[in-house]
Amino acid sequence: SQQGEEDPQALSIQEGENATMNCSYKTSINNLQWYRQNSGRGLVHLILIRSNEREKHSGRLRVTLDTSKKSSSLLITASRAADTASYFCATALAGYSTLTFGKGTMLLVSP
Amino acid sequence: DARVTQTPRHKVTEMGQEVTMRCQPILGHNTVFWYRQTMMQGLELLAYFRNRAPLDDSGMPKDRFSAEMPDATLATLKIQPSEPRDSAVYFCASGLRLAGYQETQYFGPGTRLLVL
Image (cartoon, rainbow over all chains, first blue to last red; front, side, top):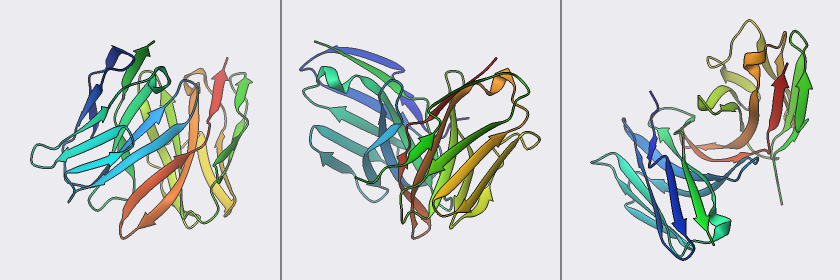
């Protein structure tokens, strides 16, 4: 089964609203990363949070990590139509050299 | 602005034909990954290399897929013979592995493959 699973699968909001996506995982991690994928494009790295960090900010993005619950959340504040994309969490497992991606959350931001 | 490049961007072929996809990783990155993305399975890791050496290709159907890295600037993924179920978007990504775990990966634009 997937190491990282995003929730919800799809999210539809209006411009200006906040969007929150969650990711749960099963085993110990070194870091957790969030990526964005616009339709027909490759994935773009958004933010990386390490296992010893609890919160990280980058522009309108805020990521939290709760290792006790094995979960992370991505908050996009004041969303824009250009934020419409799929968002993936990826976990770097302890002792492994690869990332494991979830199936993503599709975000639609309407003008 | 360093980027991962992939060619071709689109490929339509007939079942049984050989397909070769190419990737140029970002200069200085020591790991290269090949992924396949489909609606049903999501993003699957097919194979990856570190310092040009193949480390894991357990995600690939061995009888028809092969991945190589003939030099530091070129990674290839071949399918021979191709089948309709191979239709997907194939992504190459490169990155740096530091201190025993994987840092950020940088993805190419993908090769959209359709096997008829």
